[in-house]
Image (tube, rainbow, N blue to C red; front, side, top):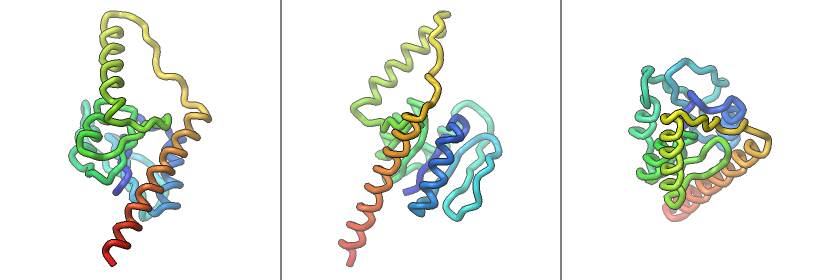
Length: 159
């Protein structure tokens, strides 16, 4: 049940939250990027460098992710693929993607792409703020707690 990070676009402050959480919870954290990354020394944190190219990191994550995993990404199509494989997906603003919301998010993303392609200035996402960071940390902690409870239940059932 590792945590996979679409690391090329993940804000530094979110990576730092993830580093601390990986150490605290002893959870494997894998940062996937097409460029070298500097991460703190840890037996729980590693990087996976992929070739440069459109969606190469996303495709690598989709190929490797499994049901028990969490993926950190702001990429809506990647989140949709992760959910389709039964894994969880969380964006850096602390929104946990779900089967109920992902279609709406994909539709809005496609609409905004169409608007930009037709020359309409749509602006980008708002700057990540303190509330976003707190929401992210809270949702990450919820997921980690869920995973710990699942492990404890599995261990109790196996005894």
